[in-house]
Image (tube, rainbow, N blue to C red; front, top):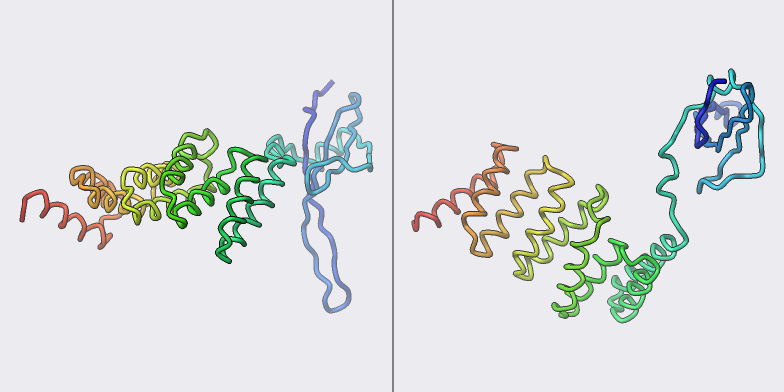
Amino acid sequence: MTKIPEGIYSEQKVQKIGTMSTARTQTVTDYYKCVQLDEDLMQVQILDMYGEPMHLLEKVPVADFLKRFTFEPEKFKTKKTPGDLAAEKAVATAEKHVERKEYNSAEYEYSKALKADRENVRASFGLGKLYIETGERDKAADIFGRLARQDNVLAPENKHFFNQLGIELRGLKMYAQAIEFYEKAFFLAPDDENLLFNMARAALEGGDKVRAGEFIGQALKLNPHMEEAQKLLKEVEADQTGR
């Protein structure tokens, strides 16, 4: 008996939409939960957009199944939980309050999001920025410190959060913390010379000329023609020689 793995499979279908002069075709992908019943037969159950099984069941001969369906073992593994969805809703509400400068309401919504999902990066980032905006630097430092230690932060979608956070912290003269978050962004995008340039500026403004020079050197290795980096390197070298 040919053993076919149980799990999620996809099937592409060509559909015709529109009529007459507006008629056209498009390819759509449907996902199914598939289970082998015996040597010759598979059971397939179509899934909704959230990866939940729908009622419709179909039995497909194994020979046809192998032609039609593609195994998708990673699909829906990152399906959002009710806590994830509640946190996202609260964060979206909080961000609207921030736009209107309704800081107390924003803090409440960010806190609600973190109760639903205590490691929600967007909520922590927003709450930290809120505390910066309201002048509560100790609270901001505590939030950012906890954010830096989270296991889930090094995901590609968080790169822009870390870069923006580095910019915010550098503006507050919190240079060591700014570099820490720039480094996290760089870990996610190791070919981005602009992040190295930002680290160099933060290091130089924080008085660490040696480290600033190292960052600039790395940036110029990635992009030897980066004019801003060349200018900053001259500034660093001038400071180091006392000219």
